[in-house]
Amino acid sequence: MKKINFSTVRNFVIGVLLFILGLAIGQRYHNRISLVSTNVLQQNQDSALGKLTGTLIPPVEKQVNFDLFWEVWNLLETEYLDAQDLKTQDMVDGAIKGLTASTGDPYTMYLPPDDNKRSSEDLQGSFYGVGIELGYIDQTLAVVAPLSGTPAEKAGIEAGDLIVRVRDDAKGIDEDSSQWDLNKALDSIRGPRGTEVVLTLYREGVAEPFEVSVKRDEIVVETVTLDILDFQDKKIAHLKVAKFGARTTQEWDEAVRQILVTQPPVAGIALDLRNNPGGFFDAAIDLASDFIENDVVVSQKSRLTQEDYRSNGVARLKNYHTVVLVNKGSASASEILAGALRDDVGIKLIGGQTFGKGTVQEIKELSNAGGVHITIGRWLLPSGEWIHNEGIPVDIEVEQNRDTQEDEVLQRALLELAGR
Image 1 (tube, rainbow, N blue to C red):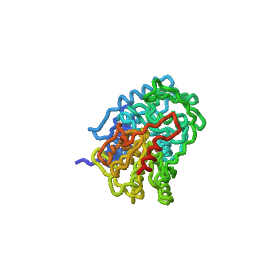
Image 2 (tube, one colour):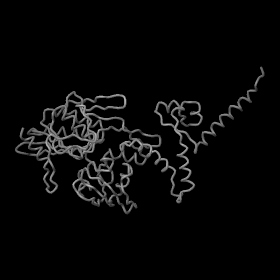
Image 3 (cartoon, rainbow, N blue to C red):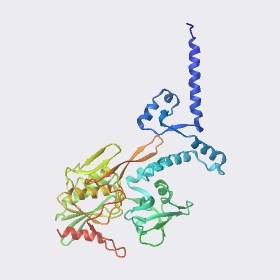
Image 4 (cartoon, rainbow, N blue to C red):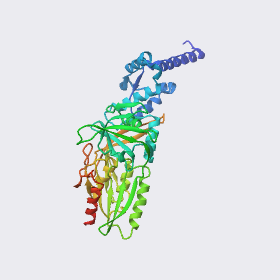
């Protein structure tokens, strides 16, 4: 057998590897990319070619032809009139946003780094804007809830209002919102302190859409507030939770301590979740645990499994007569809390039917400091009910009279508590 010179073999191998590397780099306009699970991605990163090129090499059965994608990209770069306006990163971000939007689920979304940072800051409780929690009703951008004390509330914006158009002369925006995702809506409606944005709203019961001009301000959300009210010679705790954020459990604990030491003792608790758009899943369980002793608060049904989440506290408020105030602005985590209190311990709900958001999103941090919010499951009430797009009906329906300053829903709750 003829011997082969070692240097010849080495040169041949290096040549092959460089050829493969050149092919991988040259795939800009003829690339094949797969949408695979994290495990598969990791396996392919560990492959020989993956290590060499630093790319993800999909298995053959998972390949998706991206030729058309690069064809359009190339046409934009070579044919678009204002080529100087094309920004590569914006094009990439837009493509990823389109990928998440293809699910048809408005709560599954990609957040570029700046948006992801802003989203994280929001849950800490401070930002600049008008004070609207946004969501969707029948795929239309909508007000889930105006936050208490904010410019939106002062301007008369209400839960359930549909936002059909946004105008901001300073930003050069005057657009229909029908094709917007939440990121686009937030970017357009928020802005510097003292500037104005004009929202065109459609409200059920009002014949025509109408405009509302709102001046932006700093929005600092105190998530838990407590007022001890004197009503018919009794002390009633009006305990309001505006949102389930990073500070909510801590603020809640302080409010509960105040209730426990109040003298004469509190006769009842009006737990107010009106216009509470939700937030952290775990915070809802923490709060429910002060009323529910060792029982299921909520169940999460994912693609393959279902998990029960049980109360985790000492039920410090279990012996207080309690009612829960809700309305159309009560969504997500606030519906989890309200539904658990109704199902597990028979607490009455007063006000109006809730919003109806019954899905759970998980936030995945990405390598570029962006993030993806992915709907990973449905949450179910202890009764097994899924309230998505339906909401939770109340035991005592009370319609708020917008022509008066009186809080009819709270007054009805106080009567219920005092009449025990």
